[in-house]
Length: 113
Length: 117
Image 1 (cartoon, each protein chain N blue to C red):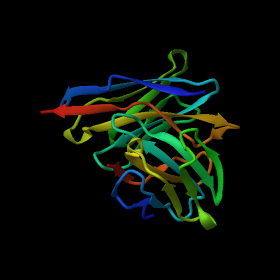
Image 2: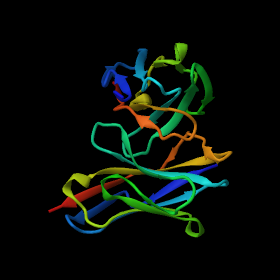
Image 3: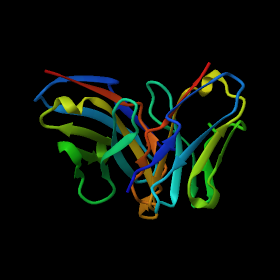
Image 4: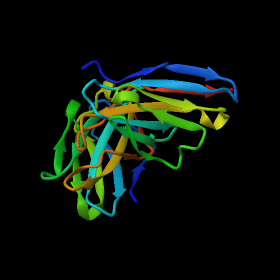
């Protein structure tokens, strides 16, 4: 168990640019979640996958956001035309099955200038 | 819809003193409740969880929490604070989907715990 891995740890980008984050879950975990955490707030749910299927998306996930999990392994979260309001910590978590606790990665901190 | 309210965004205690972090939840279905801890620039680590059964739940690092349905509360306690307990703590709720946790968590705003010598 090497834990949930997220890359990059930090990303600074200019407004209007596209960014992509990667999450590698614990290998046998079939559920994968993306959360966003802004300063002083708890994490907010964005979306989750069971294997390669994206089963739920939050209203927070605007059209500029897209997430994929090809082949049910790693996942990517892309933000197009970034805005300053997108600055946040993006957390990925995985779990073995429904009912199992979520294991979180260390997050990717995005700063949009 | 579910929600979580953590009373007190900052709690400060002396080393060796009792730690009490408050959490109230709102859920239209039986909840599953969790406490997570987050150290600076790190992800969240699970401290403990309540699913069903015994309402007093013991977790890691000496923490425990009690589920009180009548008060819709799930407060986190530790008898004696240690300097290493200084971190941010999050209460979270999931709902019971046919006898197991649905998985998606709704988090409270967090409580920063400071421990001073």
